[in-house]
Length: 101
Image (cartoon, rainbow, N blue to C red):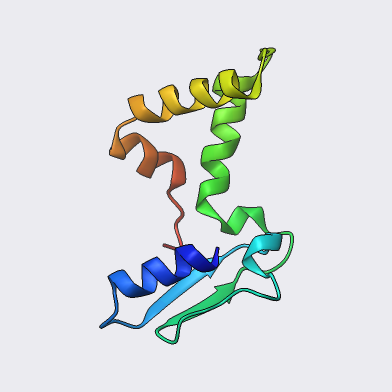
């Protein structure tokens, strides 16, 4: 996560970045290095309804994974990747739309 934050901050080095994240363990690691031009705001605990990507994961579970036994993690990942690659930006935006954004 620190490497991602470093790259994000370097890409937008001349801007102040506000990053909203859930409380996943790697987002809150004690050794996380947060660059100076980046501010992290955490969503409240146990509030998946505030995280737009949760709607996408819910849709994927219903439409890609439901009632299906994958033979391996690779097969699961390949199926998810194929589905995501076929989705248009408009479809993704519709799934992740939140009235507060």
